[in-house]
Length: 328
Image (cartoon, rainbow, N blue to C red; front, side, top):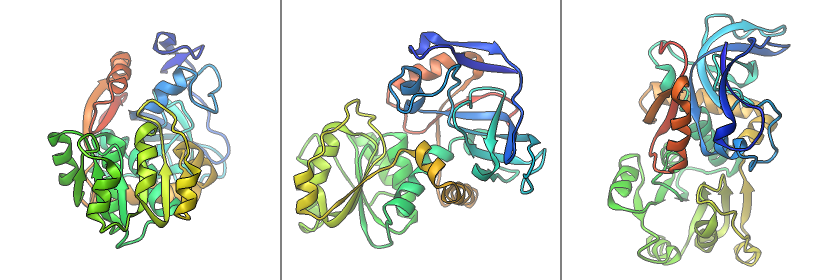
């Protein structure tokens, strides 16, 4: 089978297409014939050796896939060959076949394209895991979503709204702010035109927000700490802004606030039952038009390198998908 493989973690130039033997599923695992895979900044960081823990070599990127179950290992009873599934995978998604834990797969309906299903595990399932299961976001609470001009932030906007929260989105520019509103945000603030703490104070009558969802890091994280209400929770889910932030413990202590590190691949490993439920939920919500995942760009396995460059540009407001097998 074809796969994109890096023999060293030295960036995109180390990635090459190669023919490899199809993996064999072990106990509790399934082999998925990949129809589509999602691509994220995490893949780029791992390929450059900047993500920890570092993946083993040889390395194939790809943390989420959708496709057909091709074979099942022993002890697998809930899935069978031919089932249509989406799955969290521990790397390896940019290949014609990948092994996944059966406990991290969820059935997708016949009418859902693999490209849409492959966009769900990391962005939407990860946001649901972080907001519902880690931060305990409840209906009626207020959440501040940073980076709401990008795919991760927009997914969090939709998930938070689905959970019944009031959503304040942070996005730069009128077009990105409009999209955040379209996805469900109640208000949008532009931190480049006014200090974030002032904008949030005005919108919350100086009460602050219950939860901050931050996929950005850097200055945005540091400013967002000052918007928390007493007893608030801040979720750090990535550093798309390019800088790991400093943690102002004084700001957290003064608000009796909680800092939650939400590294989706590690959370999935630690909490597989919750991860599978989150994935099943976002699939059902997508099928029922309760959330609306979008694809910003689609590439094939043969032209996957341009896909990496597209993701590096940090301009996508939807998923970046690599199609590999048949789109059924």
